[in-house]
Length: 206
Image 1: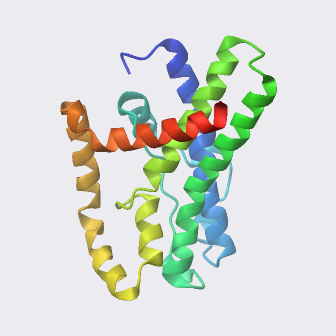
Image 2 (image 1 turned 90 degrees about the horizontal axis):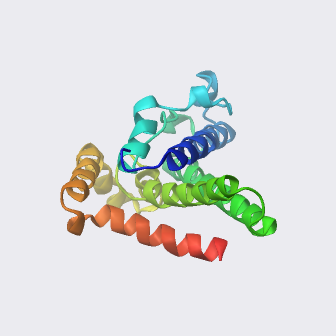
């Protein structure tokens, strides 16, 4: 965070609010449509950012480049098709980030680079942030969305084995983040997200 400019911090903060809020709202909305009203009953079926933002998770994005919002609670037992529906609930979060990135990239293209430099910079940061959230959340590691997506679509026998990795998932994720911060040459997670994000970003805003 100390290495970021005031403009970058401001742009990230403004971009994080809709990025996290819409992501979590998408989870809640699809879960409710598929039979589980848990999130709705807890007041999470809303676009009110205060219901979704996590203070520490938001600060971590600014400091480390990785962060989180308050997870939307989902009860798989209430879903009509169990883990298959759970996978759908999980994947719509990252897909919402992709849709936001595409929409704002289209706005940036239509503007033709007109407007203030600060606005143009914000639009690009918004696109980049949402694309990076897409790839980060699709990692098949618990507690990320990608873990639930994989769990839902793996064959029954493999799904059972894969589910047992949930307990060590957070430690693996934390280990990768710490490893990347201590040894940049071994930053597997950062290189994956940066490379994938850069590829999509160039395709969207060229």
